Figure 1 (spheres, rainbow, N blue to C red):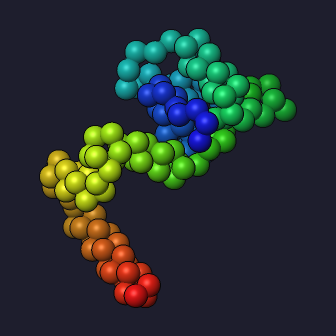
Figure 2 (cartoon, rainbow, N blue to C red):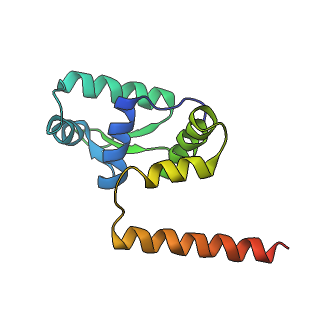
Length: 128
């Protein structure tokens, strides 16, 4: 990924990943529920994101519709890689232990974690 999204850009991307293609007004209204933000700031940020290649804009309708041009998984991997390398000295296990210590995972989350660990064990056994 060439340009990493800023915090404000991540908020917009998060809305687009969950809602799908949306107008600036829709994005702005959702962001404004959580913090004070001007419509023009949302618009300008989305225009800059389009210039950076993070969003695409469909101009066929009167209200332009934006959509994420980058996958959530790609952004998450990039951010996690940087976090692991800068905060946890390259140790993924330290990141995981720290993350699990931050709160109480739900039963469903624990089930997902167990399934992932089992899959990793299987994959490791297959390579030996």
